[in-house]
Amino acid sequence: MKIPFVDLYAQYQSIRPEIDAAIADVIAQSAFIRGAHVDKFERAWAETLGVKHCVSCANGTDALYVAMRGLGVKPGDEVITTAHSWISTSETITQAGGRVVFCDTDDDTFTLNPALIESKITSRTVGIIPVHLYGQSCDMDVVMAIAKKHKLWVIEDCAQAHLAKFKGQFVGTFGNAATFSFYPGKNLGAYGDAGCAVTNDDRLADWMATFARHGGKGEHVMEGINSRMDGLQGAVLGVKLPHLQSWTEARRRVAARYTEVLRGVGDLVTPKVGPNRDHVYHLYVVRTGRRDALKKHLADAGIATVLNYPKALPFYPAYSYLGHTPKDFPVAYANQSRILSLPIFPEMTDEMLAYVAASIAEFFGQDQAGKKPPAERAGVASKRA
Ligand SMILES: Cc1ncc(COP(=O)(O)O)c(C=O)c1O
Figure 1 (cartoon, rainbow, N blue to C red):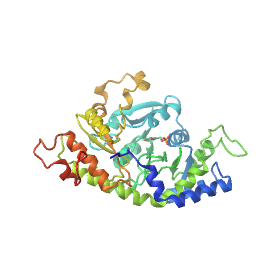
Figure 2: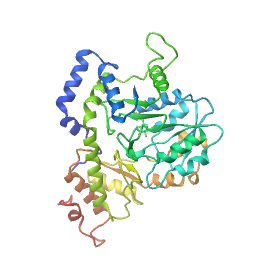
Figure 3: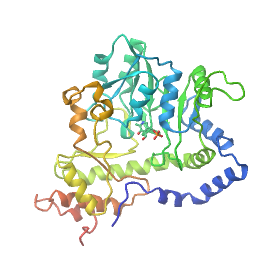
Figure 4: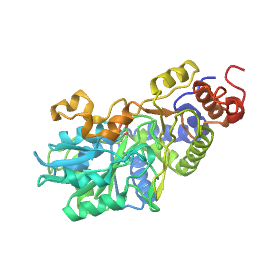
């Protein structure tokens, strides 16, 4: 059996007539850059989250950059962010002229450890970028309280957390601004690159929209950048948005089943959900001391897995200039060699999941450990059957 990491074609098949019609409409209107579908999606996404403004961008990385420029980051300004994320979160701090200040993570949730943020604040700190990693919110109570106390702005990086909640409130609605990626594999994914920044701040929204579109149409009130959403992406996202809630519930069902069948298997640690969080499982990340061997075993069984991410950010060559050592970020450092993302997508069947679980149990010699045979635990025939 071959199990892909995500199956975007299966999702397309489930909504094919709607997608085909929306794409045909964009072509019929020649509305290739922005246009009515993008405008409509911006309104729909803002309404879904309950925010005033959604400014579409060409991708989630640009959205971070645009938001930081909008909040006035200047050379020498320090921005605190997590040591465990995709590089967009930190590279855009540098692009905007700021200095990246990494902070270690909370071992349970993989997100920025709020207890450590204050130790990173200096007289040059201007903002905090919490990342709701893998689909789980940071502790936004603590992040927002620290920001308020020290007069810092907050940009929530929600690239992996569409519809995730903290204390019943959508992520993306706590900070001064928030950014989303609609990269194809994201929980709400386009058919190419796309992203957006959201905010309740009228002035900031206006500035970001102007800056992202060459500093204004007709009258260039400033020099900006070209970060427009394609019409095709707006149309695809508009079709997909009404399905997002049910796809999120399907992801939660897959995650719950994984957690059930993987409990007690080898030294595996399944994802933990922090208090007051509604996790949306963009990724289902387990931990084991035998990560590389498990990854190979699963690949041999036809199961795709991914490392999100192979290293914590401070340990990439891009940040060697900061001179960090593992003791600066012990949690993120320890996790970088233990984490493994298992396949998860809304269309994943029980049979697929059982096959993954059986293959993992087989790797850990579940039979020898005196437990139920893997096939029985997972509810299907073993992969060798
Ligand atoms: C945490 C995080 N931030 C930002 C981004 C950037 O999004 P994009 O790929 O749309 O530029 C991503 C995308 O992978 C991400 O995972």
